[in-house]
Image (cartoon, rainbow, N blue to C red; front, side):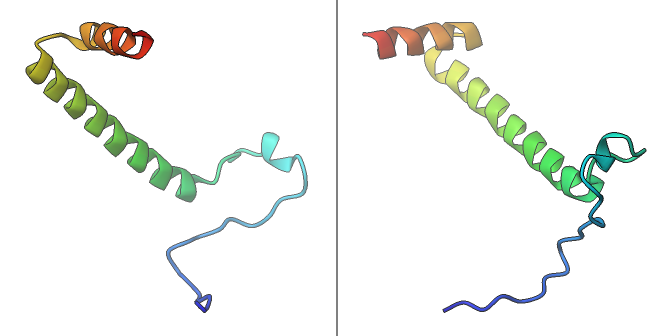
Length: 75
C-alpha cells in the first residue's frame, strides 16, 4: 500500500470564504494555473506537429484532413 508523503511541489493558496474569490484582486490560483497553461501550450504544439505530419502524408491541408476523416467516419 502506498503511503502519502508531503510534496513541496504543490503550493496551495489560503482558503477564502465562499464567494470571496469573485471579488478579490487575485481570483485565480496563479501557481496552479501556470502549470496548466504550460501543459496546454505543449499539447497545442503536438497538435500542430500532428497536423503538419498529416499534411505530408495525405497531401491535404487541415480542412482537407477533416473532410477525409468525416468521410471515413460517416462511411
